[in-house]
Image (cartoon, rainbow, N blue to C red):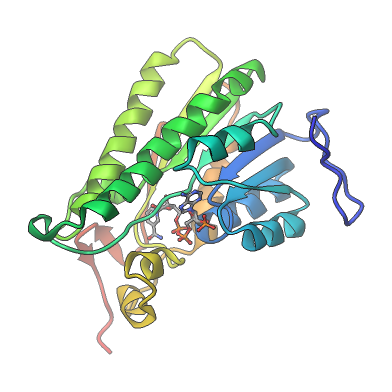
Length: 261
Ligand SMILES: NC(=O)c1ccc[n+]([C@@H]2O[C@H](COP(=O)([O-])OP(=O)(O)OC[C@H]3O[C@@H](n4cnc5c(N)ncnc54)[C@H](OP(=O)(O)O)[C@@H]3O)[C@@H](O)[C@H]2O)c1
């Protein structure tokens, strides 16, 4: 049993206080960090995972949660992380993102591999590993952050499209395979959200990342976190299968309204 005592004197234990334990992957920034904050404020004991230890530890300290290093592309890392989670009622599969912007004819196969490993196999690994404790809770929930890129392909996005289409298939299959068992399965599919997403996609090019959101009002990480918090707070018989959330300035993956500068 891990020690959930925090240096600040607060203590999390597994007496299933409040709503129970929620695991959030990719909680060091963006939607994951905002989700950890929203869930903690709603009475969840939050367990946060990500690769950047300092960043994820800072968010955990802020919300009175617990942070552990986690690389969802590494089976050993997932195994070590899950070993510290003896009870859990909610898994938010948020870790993910896009790498690169190129036509299929110029596809960088290494970037495609990392996107598949993170957005698809990462979700499969985490879900598979936590299914027993989620089911044992009597009302487990898995909420996966997909994307409108998983329903609407766009030029230069095929690697990310393929990964998010794939994870949507995984969630739909799980929904059928787990029918009759006490586990709910949801997918939240946002459009443009201003996070570190574009910075990562464009290899740290801040100007190129900023241009993605220029002249429009994108969603914030908090907007998406609020959707996740809401899904997680529905009664046990209600399964929100899919929730698509877009900025008012966006009508689809390829359709955005930008104010003239
Ligand atoms: N922003 C958007 O416009 C948008 C739209 C639709 C969907 N999404 C999806 O929303 C999710 C969150 O993205 P975001 O917008 O919040 O971007 P972000 O700020 O870049 O956050 C991505 C998070 O994923 C974590 N992560 C990446 N690779 C990981 C790995 N191998 N193992 C564990 N954690 C990993 C990162 O943490 P570390 O680097 O510390 O590991 C970070 O915490 C992603 O699944 C993304 O595809 C984003």
